[in-house]
Length: 193
Image (cartoon, rainbow, N blue to C red):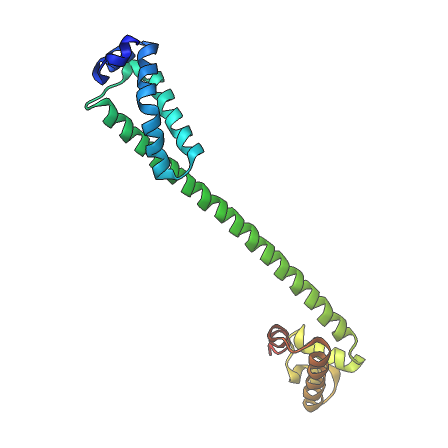
């Protein structure tokens, strides 16, 4: 039986601070399993728990010469595991939030792209249907809806009555509603005046 097995934690710490590898190995043997179980209980994940405990012991060895314990070794190790678990969970939450925000952004971009595509397709359909209107009706409609002229301005420009302008636009809208459909977007687009 090695001498370190019979040493108290405080004696092992003194040896550890002097760089004694067998003291470190004894601390590892005494506490690895209970610290792993503690971490696993908090994380509910064997691999993450094992990684955290392994990192703790790696840090313990690397900082062994400057280790400053105010209480017992077991209390120090339990606190260190708990703090590492909480840091891990915070980091995991931040990463999950970040990944979710990226995913949300990508979905939003996809939706925006899809909306823009549908909007362009709808605009092309409307444009084709406007171009298919009878010539005089198309001219009146374009002056009204694309050049934003009033009925009176159109009547003066085309040398026709305001009643004819109103009638041509009304007929154009009726034809376009029939050909393109009655979607709210289309009606809002066509009826903006």
